[in-house]
Length: 375
Image (cartoon, rainbow, N blue to C red; front, side, top):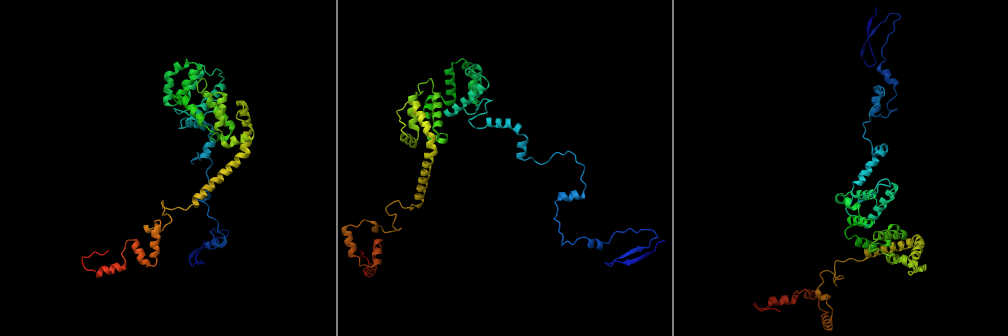
Protein backbone atom coordinates (compact mmCIF):
# COMPACT_ATOMS: atom_id res chain seq x y z
CA UNK A 1 0.00 0.00 0.00
CA UNK A 2 1.42 3.33 -0.99
CA UNK A 3 1.47 6.41 1.19
CA UNK A 4 0.71 9.95 0.00
CA UNK A 5 2.71 12.97 1.10
CA UNK A 6 2.85 16.62 0.10
CA UNK A 7 6.00 18.23 -1.20
CA UNK A 8 6.82 21.70 -2.43
CA UNK A 9 8.54 22.14 -5.80
CA UNK A 10 10.94 24.88 -6.87
CA UNK A 11 8.08 27.23 -7.84
CA UNK A 12 6.34 26.89 -4.49
CA UNK A 13 3.60 24.59 -5.71
CA UNK A 14 2.45 21.57 -3.61
CA UNK A 15 2.35 18.18 -5.29
CA UNK A 16 1.22 14.74 -4.23
CA UNK A 17 3.93 12.11 -3.78
CA UNK A 18 2.98 8.51 -3.39
CA UNK A 19 5.30 5.73 -2.32
CA UNK A 20 5.42 2.78 -4.72
CA UNK A 21 5.64 -0.90 -4.01
CA UNK A 22 8.98 -2.60 -4.48
CA UNK A 23 9.65 -3.27 -8.16
CA UNK A 24 7.14 -0.70 -9.43
CA UNK A 25 8.42 2.03 -11.73
CA UNK A 26 7.08 5.54 -11.47
CA UNK A 27 6.37 7.29 -14.78
CA UNK A 28 6.02 11.02 -14.65
CA UNK A 29 6.82 13.85 -17.03
CA UNK A 30 9.95 15.82 -16.59
CA UNK A 31 9.48 19.11 -14.83
CA UNK A 32 9.11 22.17 -16.97
CA UNK A 33 12.21 23.61 -15.39
CA UNK A 34 14.31 20.77 -16.74
CA UNK A 35 12.80 21.12 -20.23
CA UNK A 36 13.63 24.80 -20.22
CA UNK A 37 17.09 24.06 -19.03
CA UNK A 38 17.73 21.50 -21.76
CA UNK A 39 16.40 23.68 -24.61
CA UNK A 40 18.87 26.18 -26.08
CA UNK A 41 18.44 29.77 -24.95
CA UNK A 42 16.37 31.84 -27.37
CA UNK A 43 18.96 34.58 -27.59
CA UNK A 44 21.55 32.18 -28.97
CA UNK A 45 19.49 30.28 -31.56
CA UNK A 46 16.82 32.16 -33.52
CA UNK A 47 15.53 29.84 -36.22
CA UNK A 48 13.84 31.67 -39.08
CA UNK A 49 10.10 31.52 -39.11
CA UNK A 50 9.11 28.98 -41.75
CA UNK A 51 6.34 29.78 -44.19
CA UNK A 52 2.83 28.66 -43.35
CA UNK A 53 3.04 25.82 -45.82
CA UNK A 54 6.05 24.30 -44.02
CA UNK A 55 4.48 24.74 -40.60
CA UNK A 56 1.34 23.02 -41.66
CA UNK A 57 3.34 20.25 -43.30
CA UNK A 58 5.37 19.62 -40.14
CA UNK A 59 2.37 19.46 -37.85
CA UNK A 60 0.00 17.56 -40.14
CA UNK A 61 1.17 14.41 -41.90
CA UNK A 62 1.01 14.68 -45.68
CA UNK A 63 -1.60 12.45 -47.34
CA UNK A 64 -0.70 9.95 -49.98
CA UNK A 65 0.05 11.61 -53.32
CA UNK A 66 -2.80 11.49 -55.81
CA UNK A 67 -3.35 13.34 -59.10
CA UNK A 68 -4.69 16.82 -58.44
CA UNK A 69 -5.37 19.42 -61.13
CA UNK A 70 -3.24 22.55 -60.82
CA UNK A 71 -5.46 25.42 -59.73
CA UNK A 72 -2.90 28.08 -60.62
CA UNK A 73 -3.65 30.24 -63.62
CA UNK A 74 -1.26 29.28 -66.39
CA UNK A 75 1.23 31.89 -67.43
CA UNK A 76 1.35 33.10 -71.06
CA UNK A 77 4.67 31.36 -71.58
CA UNK A 78 3.34 28.02 -70.31
CA UNK A 79 0.23 28.18 -72.45
CA UNK A 80 2.09 29.26 -75.55
CA UNK A 81 4.74 26.58 -75.16
CA UNK A 82 2.28 23.80 -74.39
CA UNK A 83 -0.14 24.57 -77.21
CA UNK A 84 2.00 26.20 -79.87
CA UNK A 85 0.70 23.87 -82.55
CA UNK A 86 -2.92 24.58 -81.59
CA UNK A 87 -2.39 28.35 -81.55
CA UNK A 88 -0.88 28.46 -85.04
CA UNK A 89 -4.17 28.19 -86.96
CA UNK A 90 -5.72 30.61 -84.48
CA UNK A 91 -2.97 33.13 -85.15
CA UNK A 92 -3.54 32.82 -88.88
CA UNK A 93 -7.26 33.30 -88.41
CA UNK A 94 -6.65 36.37 -86.26
CA UNK A 95 -4.32 37.82 -88.84
CA UNK A 96 -6.76 37.18 -91.68
CA UNK A 97 -9.57 38.97 -89.85
CA UNK A 98 -7.47 41.91 -88.72
CA UNK A 99 -7.51 45.36 -90.23
CA UNK A 100 -4.39 44.87 -92.35
CA UNK A 101 -4.91 45.30 -96.07
CA UNK A 102 -3.78 41.79 -96.94
CA UNK A 103 -2.12 38.75 -95.34
CA UNK A 104 0.48 36.37 -96.76
CA UNK A 105 -0.32 32.89 -95.39
CA UNK A 106 2.64 31.15 -97.00
CA UNK A 107 3.11 29.07 -100.09
CA UNK A 108 0.59 26.41 -99.03
CA UNK A 109 -2.36 28.85 -98.87
CA UNK A 110 -3.53 31.68 -101.09
CA UNK A 111 -3.22 35.23 -99.72
CA UNK A 112 -6.19 36.90 -98.06
CA UNK A 113 -7.05 40.45 -99.13
CA UNK A 114 -9.13 42.30 -96.52
CA UNK A 115 -9.10 45.76 -98.06
CA UNK A 116 -11.47 46.85 -100.74
CA UNK A 117 -8.73 48.81 -102.55
CA UNK A 118 -4.99 48.18 -102.66
CA UNK A 119 -2.01 50.27 -103.61
CA UNK A 120 -0.31 49.26 -106.87
CA UNK A 121 2.72 47.82 -105.10
CA UNK A 122 0.51 45.86 -102.71
CA UNK A 123 -1.34 44.34 -105.64
CA UNK A 124 2.00 43.33 -107.16
CA UNK A 125 2.83 41.46 -103.95
CA UNK A 126 -0.57 39.77 -103.87
CA UNK A 127 -0.20 38.53 -107.45
CA UNK A 128 3.28 37.22 -106.63
CA UNK A 129 1.86 35.21 -103.70
CA UNK A 130 -0.94 33.87 -105.89
CA UNK A 131 1.51 32.76 -108.56
CA UNK A 132 3.66 30.94 -105.99
CA UNK A 133 0.60 29.21 -104.57
CA UNK A 134 -0.51 28.09 -108.04
CA UNK A 135 2.95 26.73 -108.68
CA UNK A 136 2.86 24.90 -105.35
CA UNK A 137 -0.41 23.26 -106.42
CA UNK A 138 1.08 22.35 -109.82
CA UNK A 139 -1.42 24.54 -111.67
CA UNK A 140 0.49 25.39 -114.83
CA UNK A 141 -2.27 27.32 -116.60
CA UNK A 142 -2.66 30.41 -114.43
CA UNK A 143 -5.74 31.54 -116.35
CA UNK A 144 -7.63 28.27 -116.13
CA UNK A 145 -11.03 28.11 -114.50
CA UNK A 146 -9.54 26.67 -111.32
CA UNK A 147 -6.86 29.35 -111.16
CA UNK A 148 -9.37 32.15 -111.77
CA UNK A 149 -11.63 30.88 -109.01
CA UNK A 150 -8.67 30.86 -106.62
CA UNK A 151 -7.77 34.43 -107.59
CA UNK A 152 -11.33 35.70 -107.09
CA UNK A 153 -11.56 33.90 -103.73
CA UNK A 154 -8.57 35.83 -102.34
CA UNK A 155 -10.56 39.07 -102.03
CA UNK A 156 -12.54 38.82 -98.79
CA UNK A 157 -14.02 42.29 -98.35
CA UNK A 158 -17.78 42.53 -98.54
CA UNK A 159 -17.79 44.55 -101.73
CA UNK A 160 -15.29 42.25 -103.44
CA UNK A 161 -17.12 39.06 -102.47
CA UNK A 162 -20.42 40.42 -103.79
CA UNK A 163 -18.72 41.64 -106.96
CA UNK A 164 -17.07 38.33 -107.83
CA UNK A 165 -20.03 36.24 -106.73
CA UNK A 166 -22.33 38.13 -109.07
CA UNK A 167 -20.00 38.17 -112.09
CA UNK A 168 -18.02 34.93 -111.61
CA UNK A 169 -19.52 33.13 -114.60
CA UNK A 170 -18.88 36.08 -116.87
CA UNK A 171 -15.29 36.53 -115.67
CA UNK A 172 -14.48 32.88 -116.34
CA UNK A 173 -15.17 33.42 -120.04
CA UNK A 174 -12.97 36.52 -120.48
CA UNK A 175 -9.61 36.48 -122.20
CA UNK A 176 -6.39 36.66 -120.20
CA UNK A 177 -5.92 40.40 -120.71
CA UNK A 178 -9.57 41.19 -120.05
CA UNK A 179 -9.57 39.13 -116.86
CA UNK A 180 -6.44 40.91 -115.59
CA UNK A 181 -7.93 44.31 -116.40
CA UNK A 182 -11.14 43.47 -114.54
CA UNK A 183 -9.21 42.47 -111.44
CA UNK A 184 -6.99 45.59 -111.56
CA UNK A 185 -9.93 47.91 -112.17
CA UNK A 186 -11.75 46.46 -109.17
CA UNK A 187 -8.86 46.35 -106.69
CA UNK A 188 -6.91 49.47 -107.83
CA UNK A 189 -9.66 51.70 -109.14
CA UNK A 190 -11.38 52.41 -112.42
CA UNK A 191 -8.51 54.72 -113.46
CA UNK A 192 -5.89 52.16 -112.50
CA UNK A 193 -3.63 52.97 -115.48
CA UNK A 194 -3.23 56.56 -114.34
CA UNK A 195 -2.75 55.45 -110.73
CA UNK A 196 0.04 53.03 -111.67
CA UNK A 197 1.73 55.60 -113.91
CA UNK A 198 1.68 58.25 -111.17
CA UNK A 199 3.09 55.74 -108.70
CA UNK A 200 5.98 54.95 -111.02
CA UNK A 201 6.76 58.62 -111.60
CA UNK A 202 6.74 59.44 -107.87
CA UNK A 203 8.85 56.48 -106.67
CA UNK A 204 12.39 57.56 -105.67
CA UNK A 205 15.55 55.59 -105.01
CA UNK A 206 15.81 56.86 -101.42
CA UNK A 207 12.27 55.63 -100.66
CA UNK A 208 12.77 51.93 -101.39
CA UNK A 209 14.12 49.37 -98.94
CA UNK A 210 17.82 49.83 -98.11
CA UNK A 211 17.96 52.57 -100.77
CA UNK A 212 19.25 49.86 -103.06
CA UNK A 213 19.31 50.41 -106.81
CA UNK A 214 18.37 46.76 -107.36
CA UNK A 215 15.25 47.13 -105.22
CA UNK A 216 14.46 50.38 -106.98
CA UNK A 217 14.81 48.73 -110.40
CA UNK A 218 12.61 45.80 -109.38
CA UNK A 219 9.94 48.13 -108.00
CA UNK A 220 9.75 50.20 -111.18
CA UNK A 221 9.82 47.09 -113.37
CA UNK A 222 7.01 45.38 -111.43
CA UNK A 223 4.84 48.49 -111.67
CA UNK A 224 5.57 48.72 -115.37
CA UNK A 225 4.47 45.09 -115.69
CA UNK A 226 0.98 46.08 -114.54
CA UNK A 227 0.75 48.35 -117.59
CA UNK A 228 1.50 45.57 -120.04
CA UNK A 229 -0.75 45.60 -123.12
CA UNK A 230 -1.79 49.18 -122.32
CA UNK A 231 -0.72 52.52 -123.85
CA UNK A 232 1.06 53.42 -120.59
CA UNK A 233 3.56 50.58 -120.82
CA UNK A 234 7.12 51.96 -121.02
CA UNK A 235 9.79 50.72 -123.36
CA UNK A 236 13.33 49.99 -122.21
CA UNK A 237 14.57 53.40 -123.32
CA UNK A 238 11.71 55.21 -121.61
CA UNK A 239 12.25 53.11 -118.51
CA UNK A 240 15.94 54.04 -118.46
CA UNK A 241 15.07 57.75 -118.56
CA UNK A 242 12.67 57.31 -115.64
CA UNK A 243 15.33 55.49 -113.60
CA UNK A 244 17.88 58.23 -114.27
CA UNK A 245 15.43 60.91 -113.20
CA UNK A 246 14.39 59.26 -109.93
CA UNK A 247 17.78 58.24 -108.53
CA UNK A 248 19.35 60.49 -105.92
CA UNK A 249 21.59 63.39 -106.93
CA UNK A 250 24.49 61.90 -104.97
CA UNK A 251 24.25 58.57 -106.77
CA UNK A 252 23.94 60.31 -110.14
CA UNK A 253 27.10 62.32 -109.39
CA UNK A 254 28.87 59.14 -108.29
CA UNK A 255 27.96 57.42 -111.58
CA UNK A 256 29.17 60.47 -113.50
CA UNK A 257 32.53 60.28 -111.71
CA UNK A 258 32.73 56.60 -112.64
CA UNK A 259 32.21 57.50 -116.33
CA UNK A 260 28.79 55.87 -116.54
CA UNK A 261 27.19 57.84 -119.37
CA UNK A 262 23.47 58.41 -119.56
CA UNK A 263 23.55 57.77 -123.29
CA UNK A 264 24.33 54.09 -122.81
CA UNK A 265 21.78 51.48 -123.79
CA UNK A 266 19.24 50.46 -121.19
CA UNK A 267 20.84 47.13 -120.35
CA UNK A 268 24.40 48.52 -120.25
CA UNK A 269 23.43 51.47 -118.07
CA UNK A 270 21.46 49.26 -115.66
CA UNK A 271 24.33 46.76 -115.38
CA UNK A 272 26.90 49.47 -114.61
CA UNK A 273 24.62 51.25 -112.15
CA UNK A 274 23.94 47.97 -110.34
CA UNK A 275 27.68 47.20 -110.19
CA UNK A 276 28.59 50.60 -108.65
CA UNK A 277 25.59 50.68 -106.32
CA UNK A 278 27.22 48.36 -103.76
CA UNK A 279 30.35 50.54 -103.53
CA UNK A 280 28.26 53.69 -103.26
CA UNK A 281 26.13 52.37 -100.39
CA UNK A 282 29.15 50.90 -98.60
CA UNK A 283 31.56 53.83 -98.78
CA UNK A 284 29.86 57.01 -99.99
CA UNK A 285 26.43 56.73 -98.40
CA UNK A 286 27.71 56.62 -94.77
CA UNK A 287 29.76 59.77 -95.39
CA UNK A 288 26.78 61.58 -96.84
CA UNK A 289 24.59 60.48 -93.95
CA UNK A 290 27.11 61.77 -91.40
CA UNK A 291 27.36 65.10 -93.20
CA UNK A 292 23.58 65.42 -93.29
CA UNK A 293 23.39 64.57 -89.59
CA UNK A 294 26.00 67.21 -88.71
CA UNK A 295 24.20 69.82 -90.79
CA UNK A 296 20.96 69.00 -89.02
CA UNK A 297 22.60 69.35 -85.60
CA UNK A 298 24.19 72.68 -86.58
CA UNK A 299 20.85 73.98 -87.77
CA UNK A 300 19.20 73.00 -84.50
CA UNK A 301 22.02 74.57 -82.49
CA UNK A 302 21.74 77.83 -84.41
CA UNK A 303 18.00 77.93 -83.76
CA UNK A 304 18.53 77.43 -80.03
CA UNK A 305 21.27 80.07 -79.81
CA UNK A 306 19.38 82.71 -81.82
CA UNK A 307 18.02 85.53 -79.57
CA UNK A 308 14.26 85.48 -79.30
CA UNK A 309 12.20 88.67 -78.89
CA UNK A 310 8.50 89.35 -78.84
CA UNK A 311 9.06 92.52 -80.84
CA UNK A 312 8.66 92.31 -84.60
CA UNK A 313 9.28 95.96 -85.50
CA UNK A 314 12.29 98.24 -85.37
CA UNK A 315 11.91 98.79 -81.64
CA UNK A 316 13.08 95.25 -80.81
CA UNK A 317 16.25 96.54 -79.14
CA UNK A 318 14.58 99.55 -77.49
CA UNK A 319 13.44 99.53 -73.93
CA UNK A 320 9.69 99.15 -73.36
CA UNK A 321 7.69 102.36 -73.09
CA UNK A 322 10.39 104.40 -74.77
CA UNK A 323 9.02 107.79 -75.89
CA UNK A 324 8.28 107.76 -79.56
CA UNK A 325 10.18 110.99 -79.97
CA UNK A 326 13.41 109.21 -79.07
CA UNK A 327 12.91 106.64 -81.84
CA UNK A 328 12.27 109.07 -84.70
CA UNK A 329 15.15 109.82 -87.09
CA UNK A 330 16.92 113.08 -86.33
CA UNK A 331 17.10 115.76 -89.03
CA UNK A 332 19.36 118.75 -89.09
CA UNK A 333 16.74 120.99 -87.47
CA UNK A 334 15.93 118.49 -84.79
CA UNK A 335 19.59 117.99 -84.00
CA UNK A 336 20.06 121.73 -83.56
CA UNK A 337 16.99 121.81 -81.33
CA UNK A 338 18.36 119.07 -79.13
CA UNK A 339 21.74 120.71 -79.05
CA UNK A 340 20.19 124.00 -77.98
CA UNK A 341 18.15 122.33 -75.31
CA UNK A 342 20.96 120.12 -74.14
CA UNK A 343 21.52 122.28 -71.06
CA UNK A 344 17.87 122.00 -69.96
CA UNK A 345 17.08 120.00 -66.85
CA UNK A 346 16.53 116.32 -67.43
CA UNK A 347 13.19 116.33 -65.69
CA UNK A 348 11.87 119.06 -67.94
CA UNK A 349 12.98 117.32 -71.09
CA UNK A 350 11.50 114.03 -69.98
CA UNK A 351 8.20 115.65 -69.01
CA UNK A 352 7.88 117.48 -72.31
CA UNK A 353 8.52 114.24 -74.16
CA UNK A 354 5.44 112.72 -72.54
CA UNK A 355 3.32 115.90 -72.80
CA UNK A 356 3.64 116.83 -69.07
CA UNK A 357 3.90 120.61 -68.43
CA UNK A 358 6.98 121.94 -66.70
CA UNK A 359 6.99 123.22 -63.14
CA UNK A 360 7.40 126.85 -64.33
CA UNK A 361 4.15 126.64 -66.30
CA UNK A 362 2.36 125.09 -63.37
CA UNK A 363 3.49 127.89 -61.06
CA UNK A 364 2.60 130.52 -63.63
CA UNK A 365 -0.85 129.03 -64.05
CA UNK A 366 -1.41 129.31 -60.33
CA UNK A 367 -0.54 133.02 -60.32
CA UNK A 368 -2.45 133.84 -63.53
CA UNK A 369 -5.84 135.52 -63.47
CA UNK A 370 -8.84 133.27 -63.47
CA UNK A 371 -10.35 132.56 -66.85
CA UNK A 372 -7.15 133.12 -68.77
CA UNK A 373 -5.86 130.16 -70.72
CA UNK A 374 -2.27 129.18 -70.09
CA UNK A 375 -0.21 128.02 -73.08
